Amino acid sequence: MHDKIFMSASRPIAVLGGTGPEGFGLALRLAQAGETVIIGSRDAKRAQDAAEKIKERVGASTNISGSENNAACSAADLLVLTIPFEGHAALLKQLKPVIRPGSIVIDATVPLAASVGGRASRTLGVWQGSAAQETAELLPRGVSVVAAFQNVGADLLNADGPVDCDVIVCSDDPAALQVTCGLAAKIPGVRALDGGKLENARILEQITALLIGLNIRHKGHSGIRITGLPVAAYKPA
Ligand SMILES: NC(=O)c1ccc[n+]([C@@H]2O[C@H](COP(=O)([O-])OP(=O)(O)OC[C@H]3O[C@@H](n4cnc5c(N)ncnc54)[C@H](OP(=O)(O)O)[C@@H]3O)[C@@H](O)[C@H]2O)c1
Image 1 (tube, rainbow, N blue to C red):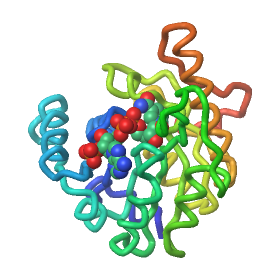
Image 2 (image 1 turned 180 degrees about the horizontal axis):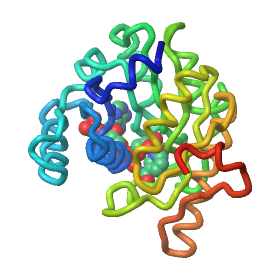
Image 3 (image 1 turned 90 degrees about the vertical axis):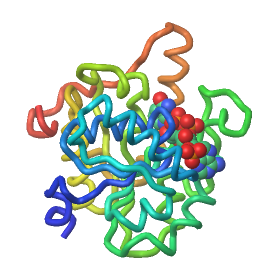
C-alpha cells in the first residue's frame, strides 16, 4: 500500500520541526527533488517563513508551504520528525489524534545529551532502546515508523552540491522502509541502505554522537559510507 501511496511526488511530505537546521535541510533537498513539502512548526508563521526561504532557493514553482505542526500532520501521510529529543514524546502525544492510519513516520531524532544540557557527543538512555522505538510505542498501530537520516548532518544538507553520505534506513515495515530508501536516494550523492529492523535505530543514533565528536575534534562535517556490499544493496548506486 505504501508504495502506491508515495510513488507520486504530489503527495505531501510534512517535515515537523522543519524550521531547524536538520528539518530545513531535508525539506530543501526533498523540494529540490520535486517533492511536495509542508514545513511544520509550533508557530505557523515561522513555518511559512522557512517555506518561503526554500522557495527563494529552489524556485517559485516549488511545491512547499508551512503550517503549525498539527495542521501539517493532518495534511500528509508521510511525516518526517526533526525535533530535539526533549520535545519528542510531547509532540508525538499531541500529534497522535491527527496522524492518519497508514501513515509513515520517518524519525531522524537523536536523543543527544545536549538536549537536556549535557554533551552533544553523548546520547541519553531511552527506555524503549532508541528515540525511533519510543515513537513506535507512542503512535497508534497502523502507523509505520522508520528510522533514517540521523547520520546526515544539517551542514551537508543545507550546502549546495551532493551530500557525501550513505543513509541507513531501519523499520519493521518493509514497505515503509523501501519508501524511505526511495526518498533518501533522491538526495544527490546519497545512497540508501536497508539497515534492518527498527531496533537498529539505537545504533544509528549512537553513530550520530560519534560523528559530532569527530566534527568537534577534527573541525569538519563528517558522514558515513558503507563499503563492500553488492551494488544492488545501494539504492541507487
Ligand atoms: N542538526 C544536525 O546536524 C542533525 C543531524 C542529524 C540528526 N539531527 C537530529 O534532528 C533533530 C533536529 O535537529 P536540529 O538541529 O534541527 O534541532 P533544533 O534546531 O534544536 O530543533 C528543530 C526544530 O524543532 C522545534 N522544536 C524545538 N524544541 C521543541 C520542542 N520542545 N517541542 C517541539 N518542537 C520543538 C523547533 O521548531 P519550532 O520552534 O519552529 O517549532 C526547531 O526549529 C534532533 O533530534 C537532532 O538530534 C540533527
